[in-house]
Length: 284
Length: 328
Image 1 (cartoon, one colour):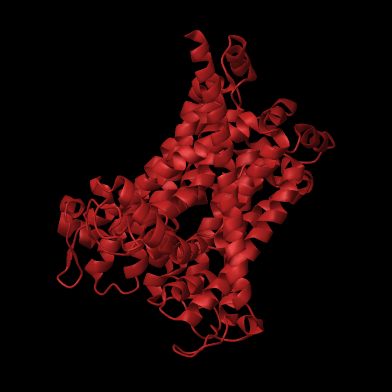
Image 2 (cartoon, helix red, strand yellow):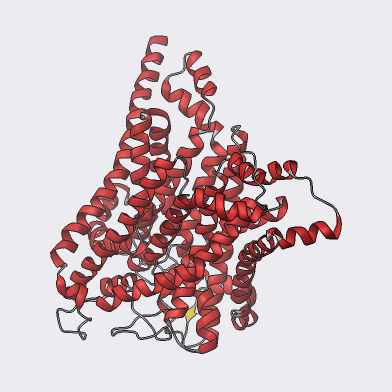
């Protein structure tokens, strides 16, 4: 009887442990499946026109997404210019100045802001920017993405500043530097590599966002000049092309998907390799 | 972790009075303090403004429908009748389906990474899984439309019908798009979060816990399942809540495979609709203020759901990591 029980326990041990391994590799397999499928389908459809031409009118085949590529870059530029400084300064406050209660509340709010669904951020930017001027614009899309950049930047900046050893600060203060000088000339430079990679990760994340752009930046089948017109972006183009009933549009959606994924994953890969070498970084 | 502030306070006891303040102001410390404080307060301001805008811009719908908004099944833009129930239902059903698939899978993978795999392999796989979490949701939608939907129509749907077809949730015509398809795509999207957080939490369980269990004759699995996992229970719950919050708010991938039909039906094969999907689809074509207000109120509902879940999740994760003897 006890032999049987022992055999059962040992058997269960092997079966369950094997299952956990299968689960882990199944999830990793999904990543490679996604990559493989996109490279296969996207690679077939990707050509020079994709990068250089405007979309053709509905019904005609061919054309490209040059305007959407430039559009995505313009939106990211706005997100970086508006969102990164806010995130950086708030991160400096939390790491270097913050009092206990206020810091806790700010940190907590930052995490919650980070978890707000992107579509809700779209509504927010719509109410802030689109409603007052009554039309979709590049600026509105940029604002939506900028708000999403802030919480990620705050948290990574704070984390890397905290990782700078206290002895460096004390050394600087002992030489007579003021606190602000210490932060600006010693602490931030020491953490700059981490802070910059953290910022790039934040931008890589919003680069793939679609939902907040649908009713802020909207879309555009032509070049968008200046900052006050609706503008096309790669993610929104993928969405509209994928749900459209045209074979040629599906082909281009795959190509756009490959380009977007390549950009996002390469940025992530590079940043994470740098960060992993520097030690503990938590992405979630 | 010793914070810099306490070290500095000890090093330089503050002078008293106005002169000290002027002195610090001159050398820039106070200016820097105030400027960074303004940006930190900006985050609180953004969040408050977000709630305010959602609240103000949904006033028409809130005053017209009141609480019945949550209990009405009609969504008729032409007649100006708006009820949120089908969307709330769709959001909950797809998220629950996603969790039913993702939690066992994610927990198992996390156990493998934290307990079994050698550290290098574990780190390498965790790295790949972080990359998976970085894939944009519109790409999951693209793959959903062209891989999962046909697979559902030809393989998964028929297989479920022939084995579990007696259950009411697996009855009815199978279109390929619907609650189950959306749930599957969502599961793939949230599984990296469950793995990543659960693995971290499991790694904080003290080694003595495992050793004690193994020392009294438990098998590896028993030590893991009966000792380590219960120890990390709250943190794992936290990871599940995080995943749930993400699933509730996910827009693009779901919009592309759910079928976009505001109905409440038991069959998981049937097309449905979620809060995020209806906002994405109808926001730009909403004619009239009431319609727009109703959509924004849906956004408010979604915001509150995820806000509460995220708040709980963060508390749980912090609690376990503190309990595990690790400073948060």
